[in-house]
Amino acid sequence: MEQLKKLLEKEQSYSIILLLDVKNSGLNDGFLFENAMRFLPLEWQAQVLRKKLQQDKFTALSNKLLQLFGCSIATGLYPDEISFQYETFGKPILKGFDNISFNMSNGQEFTSMCLLKDAFCNGIINQVGIDMASIYDTTGNEDEILDVDAFKGIFHKDELPTFKNCSTEKLGELFTYYWSLKECYTKFTGTGLNYDLTKINMGEILDYDDSDEKVTKRRIQQRDVTFYSKWINNDRKEIVTICSFEGSFIKPRIFTLKLANILEYFESIKTCK
Image (cartoon, rainbow, N blue to C red; front, top):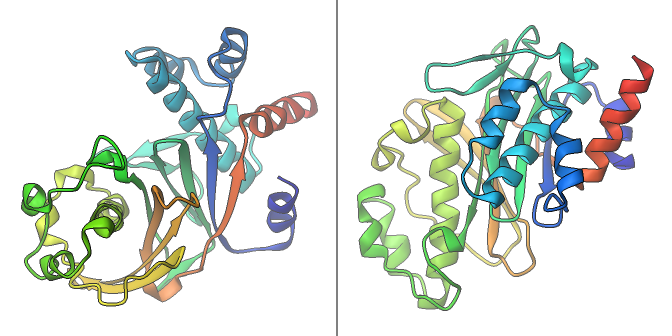
């Protein structure tokens, strides 16, 4: 948290990824859950409570808290002063701040946010998409072998050779990486799953290796974009990827937060108001 504060104080423009640990949030404690809920607008509280599964409630609550936290530290506004507008397919945009863009994604253990500030491309604020993907999204457990043929309907024909040349034990990991790239691009464009994933041609990835992070540049539908991917667990089970225009790409700094960090921040600014 201190490193994040120093970056925000020093840097005028930045790209950051915020990871909030949901798995170890302690939200199964009823008092903590209710205390955290009170920082959300009533409409958002209702959205959280409509989730049927308890874990989905924890994730939704964490996601909304992180969204308010990120937008607050980027703008200097109190959470109740922040307002959003939404694109056609529901992508949120921070109202009144044309120099800031953000995007959210949920994973197995974390919820995430990417924030860009003063990152312009051809005079226009750079948009961003973020996605978290896990090998468990497609297989029930790590011992299950991925059947790539079952997912051919989401791949462009140029992408398939990469899977054919991949070892069996790496298939799940490679699929997760590809999936995060494609999903991330749809989040970048604001279309989400309304888009035909086969039209997003990432091509054959010849340099895939065991590195923890990777930068991939592509031209997709007349857009020059850059993807940044990072495995967030040592066991390489979950990955986070962001996508933005190549012309103003800034390698993101990653900060892992605990729920306590966010609640303490909200409490501290409440007393200052």
